[in-house]
Each structure stands twice: as structure tokens, then as C-alpha cells.
Image (cartoon, rainbow over all chains, first blue to last red; front, side, top):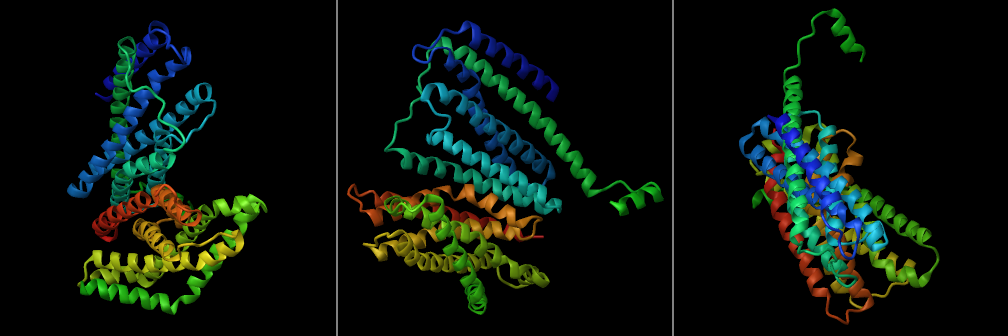
Length: 228
Length: 221
């Protein structure tokens, strides 16, 4: 099933990017540069979606104490971190030719960067805690706090920067631009679903291995364990 | 409520007996303030302008030491586990520790102010309002910081983890506190102080309630 999602996502992403690169008309002010929008905007939507999924999984874990939710939580945080990292890089690539700088203290850009670092910290926390139960509840607690914090970060950056500039991206997108945008959004979405499902499966297998390690078959296995 | 008072009393007693620790953190913060001026250069005008930001950076950096230290003693001889066996809720433990950390960070911030005035030639037209802003900002650092210190003190490579988790989270505190402090120092012709203080208050309210709610899940076994 996850492979079907991956295949579908890949096909949609290829099709949407083809339309976006070769079929969709040029934008009046930015020329061809704007075409990065067809990956940038879908990445943004899906990064937020991944973190929302992580938030829901974290709540579900704290409520149900079921490690399947922990596995999904880990997978969703990882998906969100990858997408928000990509988002920052795409943003910088797009900003250079249009705004003249790689980085701008735009609320959305800054919030994405803060979100990226907050959730990378949670992945680091997971690496440094050996007890699976503590690892699961601590990272779930951290995800909930970080997720609640995101809107506060957004508003504080917006106020902080309000004297310097207005937000510059057009909210309204006309019809010929919409088809590749939607296609790519679903493409990234299906890729994300496939990857999260696979990653959660992997996390669960690792966890089973951790909770019930296979017994050493012979003395050599024991001594190998001891010398490590 | 009794549990909270007992926990707070214990924390204050610990602080009083470990006053050398507060002094050490203060020296660290003072060193940070001194180093910032070397990084910026001997430009009096520039230093005066960015003094509020430097003050809050020094406090933020020192806060990781205070927060980590507050759970250091709980890890010795499984003291934390012993306290969880007591008939007090984990929330009482959390609020006791968070309040004590808040007091300590506020004190630290207040003690750093005269140094900032001396080093950066900053003016202090409204000292009481500044105390309020420092108290609100310290509360914003203490609430999530205490929760994360409880986690990271039990994890491997804890020195790295605490700032890694805490710093992105407290970006709104840093922004709002620096803005409010700057408005207090450099004058506030547009009346912008109020929204920033409200933002700090909102952050504090959200995190003091949320972290207290979640602390039980952090220390449970």
C-alpha cells in the first residue's frame, strides 16, 4: 500500500512539474523564476500537514499508550523536518532573484526556520534517550509544546517585522497556475503518506527489537556483545 | 496547594544553601555581557542601541545553566523518584521548581542590569517597569525550561539537548522581551509597549498551564 502511494505521488509530482515548467504561462513580474512556486507552495502545505499529523499522533500516544502511535509520531516529525528543511532552501533560492537576498525576516520564512530547529531538537532528544517508554512520552510532550508554540512564533515575528515590510507573495492565484499547483500538492502529499507509513513500520520493527532483543544464539554472540 | 508550598519551600531552601551557584551563573552572565561588547566593537552608540538585546541574550544563555542545575540535585540518589512517591502531585513539584527557577532568573536579570548600564551606557528611565518586563520574560524562560530540564537531565548528552530544545521555543519571549526593554530604555513615542507586554503575558499563560499539565507525563515511570 505505501508503495502505491509513493508511485502515485511520484507520477503526480512529475506531471505537475512538467505542466508547471513547460505548459503554464510565464508570470508577469517574476518571469520564469516564479515556477519554483509549484514545488515551494506544495512543500509548505505538506510540511504543516506533517507537523499537524505529528501533533495528533503525540496526543494519541499520550492518551492511548500505544506504541504504534509513537512510531507514527516519529515518522511524521521526520517527514515534517525534511519538508521544512527543503522549504527553507527553496525559499532562499526563490528569494535571491526576486528579493535580492537569500534570507528575509518574513514571518512565514522565520517561523519555518524556528519550526525546523524545534522539531530537529525533538529528533535529537529521541536519539539520546534509551528507555523506549520515556523516549515516546518525552518526545510526545515536546511535540505538543512545540506545535502550540508555532502560532505564537508566527505572530511575534509578524509584529516584530511589521514596520519593515508587508508580505509580498500574492494570495490570489489565477486559473492556469492552479492545475500544476494542485497536482504537485497531491503529489507531495502522497509521497509523504507513503514515506510516513514506511518509516512508521520501520520504527515499530526497531522498537520490537529493542523491547524483546533476540536471545544470543551462542557464546560467540555473547562475547561479541561484551567486547562492544 | 500544600504540596506546592512544600515543594517551593524545599526549592528555596536548596537555593539558599547553594547561593554560590547563583553567583557562578551571575559571573557567567557578566562574562557574556563583556564578550558581546568585544564582538560588537567599541562603538558606544551602537552598543547603547543594542544593549536590550545583549541583556536578554546573556540572560538566555545563563538560564540554561540555572535550569539544568535545578534538576541536577534531583538526579542524585534518585531524589526525584523519592519525591514522586510522596502524596503530592507531580504538578506541585513542577510548579514549585518552576517558581523557584523564575525567582532565580528574575534575580539574575535584575543583577545583570547595572552591569549593562555600566558597560553599554544604557539609560534607565523606568526601572520598575523594567523589573516587570524582566519578571515576565524570566517566567517565559522558566516554564518550558523547567520541563525540558526534567527531561534532558535524565538523557545522554544533556548539556547540548537543553538549549537545543529550549531556544527555538522561546523565540517569542526573546523578541517580545527585547522589544519591551528597548522601548523602556529608548523611549516609546508610539505607545508600542503594551502589545509586547501582552504578548509576553500570553506566552507565559499558555506555557505555565500547558507545561504544568504535561509534567506528569515526563516524570512518570
